[in-house]
Length: 218
Image (cartoon, rainbow, N blue to C red):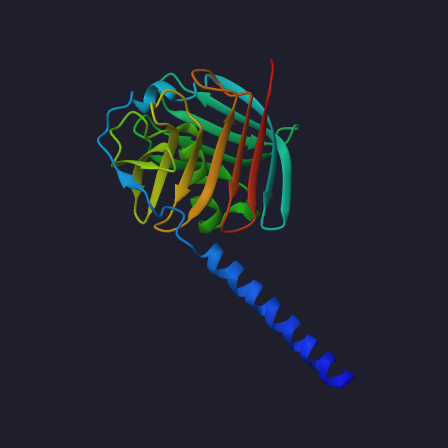
């Protein structure tokens, strides 16, 4: 009798564990944008909320697929309105040097061999496109309400760059890079808008990749 009870409890515990695992999997595979409702675009232009980067230097911590990089990130607006994003060590060795022209077209000026992979470059391109709000001067492809917040989206292939504000659109809460059903990456600026942020955080949800930036006063 004792053995049969123990066997029952073991099977029951295993069943509960499997059920919790399945429930967690189903939850993680849920639709992050379920219930989103399209609305007319009536809020103030996003460009007014775009952070302004003149020549800002940030202490940077980057974790990407098991590799940790730390150094300095320079975000600079050039005289022709293009933007340069340069990540280097404090001694000047460059991890990467990217450029976005005035239309948002991306180019790689330089990148270290270990980062010179298509998937890494694509992720970094999307990250800085999102953080610099390069699309904010254009009308959004979609405007919607979701969980009491206003989402303005710009489509790129199967992805959407979402900028999230309160319903009145007056302040920027955060940004998301989303696929059809899930959030791929989420960005946050601290503090508010109109000037270069004091700090920036970006976290990927689909693989281990984080960027943390803290502004250095010069």
